Length: 78
Image (cartoon, rainbow, N blue to C red; front, side):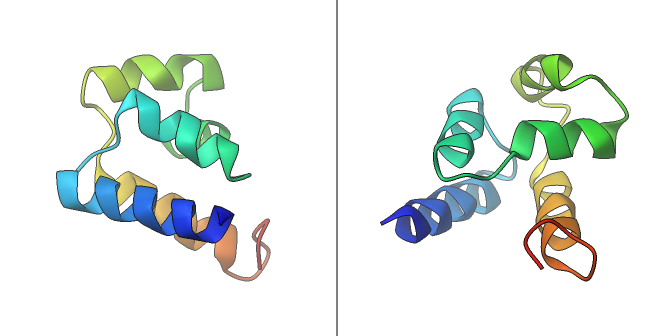
């Protein structure tokens, strides 16, 4: 069930071209620390990520980059 939700949310982000605030929560509910990972990519504090998302300063390419980093060698989900 979590994998289905994860795939659905990931697809939504790719389709929309960017994540929205609810997407951060949905990823967190499936065990994906997207906020923290995006913070590393963007060089900001995790608490700042929702604001970046709200202003459209995070796009789907950032999310793809984060997923690649989390799943490649040395990543959290390798």
